[in-house]
Length: 323
Image (cartoon, rainbow, N blue to C red; front, side, top):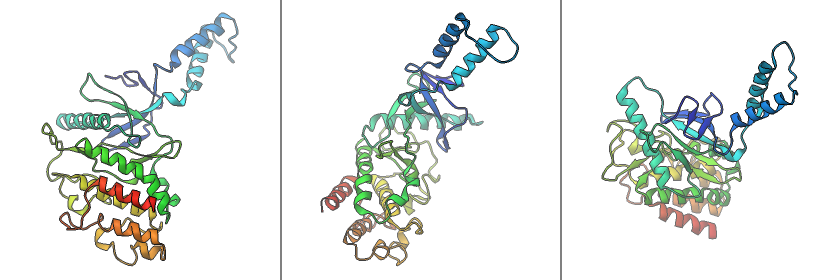
């Protein structure tokens, strides 16, 4: 369990959260087993005091000056990058039942991250193994999210597919572990310091395992309306892997399309305004990916030509990259 500032070996670095959403609050933390600011500050202040080297403006005893110096050292001794991570805790809720559900979701999110081990899936570093699922720590990626990088991909098929390929691989692994992510979108695809795309935010992950306990009411709407399939906007029961494939297709469309185009709706996929072929005429590779996306961004769950298998999608992407 944790205190207001510490959770296991992790210490919160800044009081303001670095992120917040329906699933919880995220803080920047450091691993104090690798970086101990208190020990460093106390040792330095003691050394300077003993040497008689403490000089501080204003009145006060040497002990007061040493205390001021300790606070200053602690403030400026920032941890090295390899000790910094992201802590996620649930929102504090007034309703006890809702708070229990929030903790259960957090615990399920950590369990999914622990099972899905892939270079393009965010890594779980630590969790509240002995408690009630009140927190977990994951890697903190320095490059922000894909949402801020759309301009890098407009009309560039090879770069788009080459970069997003790892995320599709990660989704294949998510499905192999019997999960459905349910929230694949640019804001949940993170960027590493070296530019790799990584799938994150497993906050509403769904599983069909036998011991699965429903944490939402059947009529609740989950996921992000602009990204989820239309048939999921008012139903959260029995999500299937094909729903993640649908969202991956929309992400690829968004990456490739002109910046003034909104996120495409399946009902307008072939309109002149939405068509990638019209946006980038005489580009054979655009037509090839457009033919694939037309099998993914479909208006109906029962569409005969609907592609639902992430592994099949990955194979088709690889075919385009080899061509």
